[in-house]
Amino acid sequence: MYIVMVHVHVKSESLEAFKRATLENAHHSRQEAGIARFDVLQQSDDPTRFLLTEVYRTAQDPAKHKETSHYNRWRATVEPMLAEERTRTVFTNLDPDDAGW
Image (cartoon, rainbow, N blue to C red; front, side):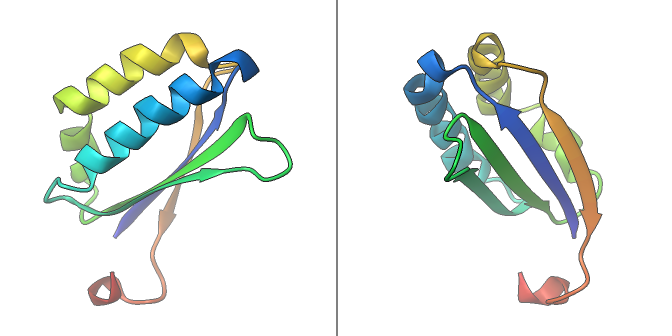
């Protein structure tokens, strides 16, 4: 598995619109064959901060995801809502093994 954690900081006035757009993107993303999991988390002590946990089946699948219409619609919609640029960290799965996803 190829795991990407995306950290997002949103302008407070854009919270609800960001959540709507992101949940729609997550719903469509979960339907992609190359995505094993796509979670949207909101930070409890700072609701303007989010973590997107994206679990891809192969290292090639993120590029395929970025070609989808729902991802490109999401990116165009939320970029003006961001308080700062998104950051991402890539992880390698250790446990459970890939079959456990």
